[in-house]
Image 1 (cartoon, rainbow, N blue to C red):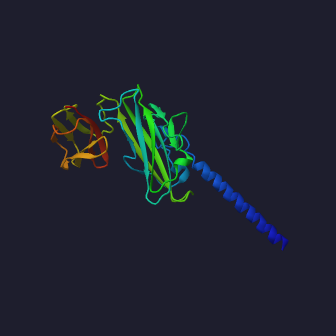
Image 2 (tube, rainbow, N blue to C red):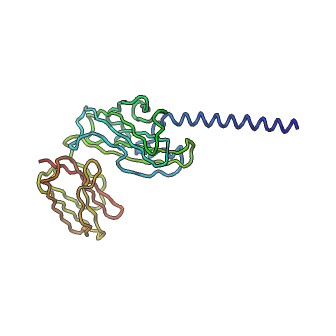
Image 3 (cartoon, rainbow, N blue to C red):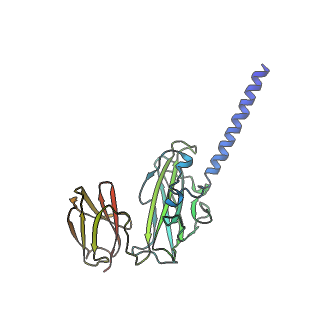
Length: 276
């Protein structure tokens, strides 16, 4: 009988210890992500799944800014908005860092909500605090960023995690990026796959010509997006062996746009500037 009571007592103490450990770990997890888990190339593509498991998905436009269409001014301060959306979840986290492809920090992160957000990694990353975790279906965080004086383009890399009960399991990890450009910078090609693309004039104020040649007979899709990620023009799907499109721009608002050329699994993005 004594042995049974002793065994039950040990089991009870162990259960309390485990629950206490779980609570401490949960509290720790609710006070920000560790530095270096944004999914960026500079972070070795590490993200929330390193701790939470599962597989990350990618979503556009979870990071937004008030940077004007014509681009950022070096040294100026802008507001960045991060949104984590997952219907049915009640706990949300994020980590964002503005970086070059080699991982160098670009610009300066500035806290505007010290109750819900914090900086770590010597100011290279911004992440959530315990007070910024709880919400229903989505959470929003705001912070400022001072644009760098030594970069023409900057990518904000973000990793987001959401959960419904505060324990690992059933978590959703999402990656999102925002690429911004210095005012007046017009040269961009993210990828090339044997495509001969000529877009002129660029900047343009009236008619834009897209000339495209490739040896592949696979169908090509052309589309143009504004800086909000909204599609403003869609070309017809065509064979790209010798393609030319002319687009009337006289009624387009001036600013920066992005031409996306997709052929199979390959994608090329060309930055466009409309200036009236």
